[in-house]
Length: 162
Ligand SMILES: [Zn+2]
Ligand SMILES: [Zn+2]
Ligand SMILES: [Zn+2]
Image (cartoon, rainbow, N blue to C red; front, side, top):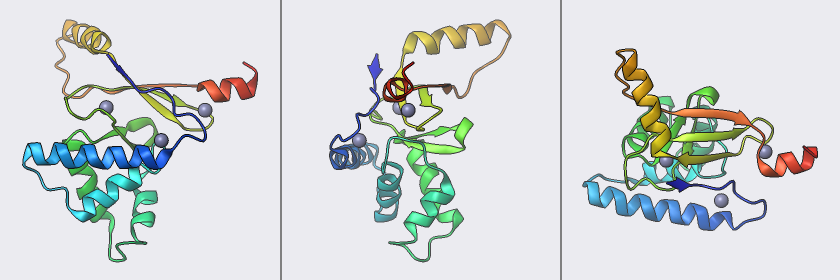
């Protein structure tokens, strides 16, 4: 099981971004897909923090380097990145987050902090299997499974004294 711990405040986030971009290069090369400068720029923006970021915030940020960027530009890039498992869509936030283990396909379970918006991904195949089993008991075939849990992250819990 892969777990992404909540990022610690003050960690070397440039390193997170660098690693994510390196992984993306390797993975796209392996898939025979092209990580264009634009797609790479969008991925870097999704990774600007550990909290999910919305398409319009991404577009605003992208315009700094790509002044002609329009909504379809962002949506196409996000679609590509999601297709290759480099990002996940967080429905409850209508936003996107970078995946730090895109090498193999997985259904993500996300812990999302209601206070600071930081998110951590748990990729627990036993949860995925249990949900698929329950769904098939209802004659339901699951095509996409993302579990989003809302709550307080460790540092917000400490701050709240909870
Ligand atoms: Zn980081
Ligand atoms: Zn993931
Ligand atoms: Zn928090």
